[in-house]
Length: 320
Image (cartoon, rainbow, N blue to C red):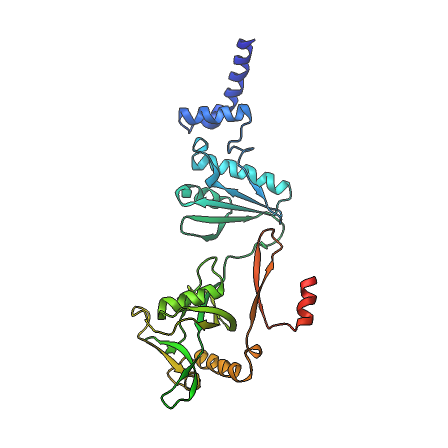
């Protein structure tokens, strides 16, 4: 019986080995054993894909074990077989995650029609549209997000007049509000308070969103679009200790003067006017406050910015 089993395995190996000649003895043996045993290796039936809720397939090459190592030509054959299978099953797309140290698989994937979607510091993502007609896959991030913080406060002048002042910094070009780019996973309010602290030494607390500027084709955003968000903050300290690497000067300036200062940027003058209006008429007329609400994805939440609702409508929305 054992002899018969050996003969049977030899006949199967004779069918498999011609396609394995380019590999070394160890890889030949591993691949043959996986094919015989139906194990979870990355062969035609083992290149694992995760089905997403849109009908696409995600393949993460970083999940391959060291024993699953293959040469680029063999990987191309396996991927081609799986793409044909997924297309026949009605899948709409392939998302291939390629770690930087497995970049040898980029060229064979590209030869099958996969194209770069985006790259991070240690990995790239390639895509292939399997559905009918032109690709409907979403593009990668199209905007960078910059956030500035304004800390309006009351200040007393030498003539004992109370002035409404704001915290500003001077760069090479003009007076502006302290701010910078939001980091991945960072809330807008957190970006504003962090940037104000880093650039001016002032600690603050987020209050509301004042304005959003959208601009396209910015050279300093790699030609992408830019969202610039200005937040109203509550100052918790007042002693300025600015960063000389990012600012030439930093001071508290009367907002009435800032609203008409020629050396200030247009958006700085505009927001200064918004703050003056809010101070005189009530910040409920200019503020977009924030509410945290549960997201459709279980366990996640999001922050929604809008004008405050009257109590009656606030209760109605809470019942939804």
